[in-house]
Image (tube, rainbow, N blue to C red):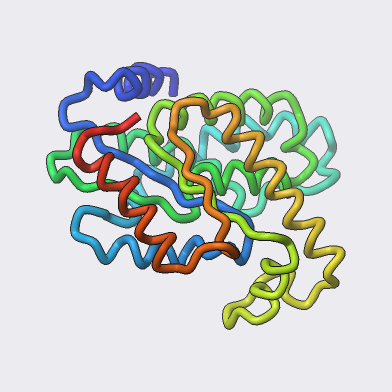
Length: 238
């Protein structure tokens, strides 16, 4: 895993030929992340996500199991082991960068929805007790440092709590807070928001475009985001 440092440092310095431009859309539930991502990816210069063959998962799954197992054993299993979704998030946070750091001649911007910032925030804010230990802290800080070298921009969406709560209530797909009280839902949103801010402050490298989705129409948001992504596609990144 240490060999990744060279890859990321090279990408950060911009010395990798045909370096891929990478942008993530983030924000609390109900802010419109997926809607915006789908709208943007209708444009030919923007590609959604990155393919990750299953074989690329295995070394990282093993690494993270060995990393977290001592903390789990010391706690004698209290608080539970990482869920499959949590292990998958840890794996993606380390497996994606190797793929994204490879040269890309297409000139397209790679747009991530439910990408590393989202997954790091979810692990930090809602992970089991073993994610509060020293081993996870080191992994989390190191992961932020690695992504600071690969993300060119972050589109940070948000809206007032009352707007987000209403959107969660009326959305068609399921959500863990859909049937919860306003108070609990606002606490949930607050934990995500606080953790997002912590991560964005630590990333340092990427440009951050902040958007209040309660104040701007979807077409206006898409236009602003397209302008930002067009700059990256033209090579005028950070």
